[in-house]
Amino acid sequence: MFYCFKVIQEHRNFLRFLWYANNAFENPLIEYRMTAHVFGNAPSPAVAIYGLRKAVESSTADVQSFVTRDFYVDDGLTSTPNVAVAVSLIQRTQQSLSKNGGIRLHKVAFNSQEVLENFDRDDLAGDIRDLDLTTDCPPVQRSLGLHWDLASDSFVFSTGITGKAYTKRGLLSTINGIFDPIGFAAPVILRGRLLFRDLNQSSGGWDDTLPEGRRQEWESWCSSLKQLHTCSIPRQYFPVTIYKDSEQEVHIFSDASKNAVAAVAFLRTKDTDNQFIASFILGKAKVAPQHGHTIPRLELCAAVLATDLGRTISDQLDIPPGSMHFYTDSMVVLGYLHNRVRGLYVYLGNSVNRILRFSKASQWSHVSSERNPADEGTRCVNACDLQESM
Image (cartoon, rainbow, N blue to C red; front, side, top):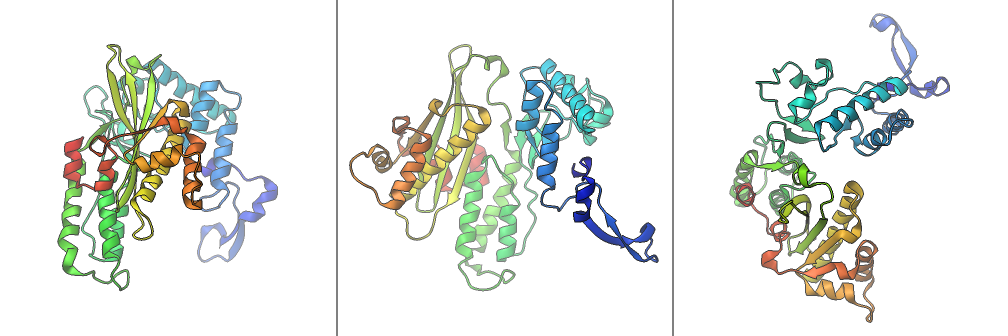
């Protein structure tokens, strides 16, 4: 992507390098200058993103919104209500980027065969290009690290976990090998992180074998990760037919234990039969500090995490904060949020202020632990348990 954007003449001296004349090793080294922005240069991403947005400044509002809000570097992901809108949006974006920036938008992938048929083969993603769209099943696509099954229009997992050495380095590599930015498998990953934290207490280097006492527990968790391959999560929050004029509310739950703090958000709407539909939006779980925090303080940390999720959802889905409802199973946290008399310690006061900068105390309600879905994130589960709950 960076090569699409040229470096102006007076700035090219900052991108000088030495190489052999005429690319022949027997020739002497001479000085070259890059004429385009290169990978590894700190300003290149900002320059490329600015150039991409600049190329659509004169385009229609929907094209500008697509490029400015739905692109992450050179990957764009968006949803539309129907085929006609999808085809029109992508084709007009292609024309605008090509005309105003000489940028080619291609490698198109959709969950609709009808959409794909409106594009030239050369514009389709490489593993779709040679398929017979009427008979062949499209392969799983990678979208910003997520695996998207076009056939079922759902997200799936591909952990790629192989046997790692029973060392600190091997354990950390195993945990970081699971990419889950939305938090579908947060309770499972958290269990691995807690095991790593406990095993990491032993002395020794990163490549020294760890004590044998908990090897079986670790290997059991690693084996359970294979169950993630059988999990799939629908990409759509709810059917397109009920999108327009539907009442949408976000419900965010928080919970804490001595081991972890967690928060999870759901989108609730009504269908045409006035039945409620709830869909998972985002979840997050963190390992709790081992010392220095009481359960009430950890519950407050979980409430802060819940408001962080709410802020992200509000920014990305254009849902106003006033349409959000927050839940905790801690009466102490509710007491903190409604406190108007007694002064709080600095740490508590700062946390409460952070929560109330985004939400109002009236938006917070109590939920019993048995009915709190965030409790799953603090209890930690195996992948097979996650599959059953899905």
